[in-house]
Length: 199
Image (cartoon, rainbow, N blue to C red; front, side, top):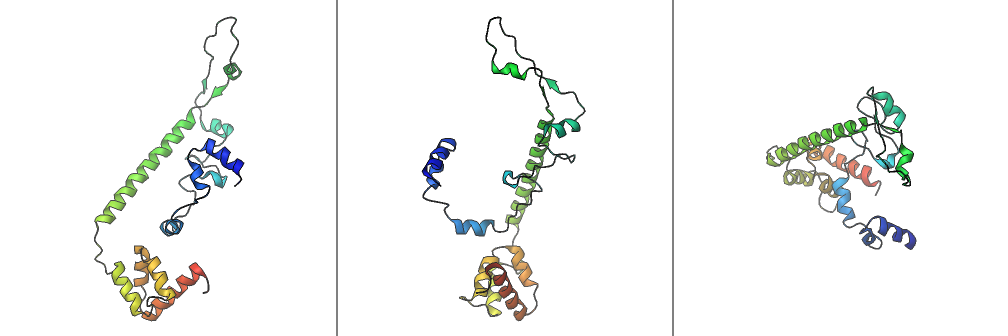
């Protein structure tokens, strides 16, 4: 980006200047760490998607017209505070008589409650996984030994993809469902092809 753009951004976002020349650190590790995450938009709003999230009752929360039609309660009316005679009116007078809806606050409160609930369940799930011992024969060490037995020795693309995939338990379990060494070797070859293309 241009120097003028960076000057503007430094004013708007203090501390962002460190990214001008440096860029993102540990990019390769972050790719591995977050490679399986997908933004489906089902449980959150991504501003860059341009899609306004739906409220629990099916309506959009982006426009006043739709929000007003969802709520039968009477909106609050804003009245200006008392002004003395001879004083110049402030910009607040232009809002005189406008009606403001407060129902959006309830939707936000509901969404925050859902997020808190999901967070609590995720935390409990992660803690239980951390406590659980891996006695199923699917430890990384055991599976990598089977990888070598099927012909994927260190230095091959099959061994490399196995070392990337098998940090995740689900991938190890899938690999272990295959019956023969040939099937396992072919599966690793296909996984490498899907991720990196023909080499």
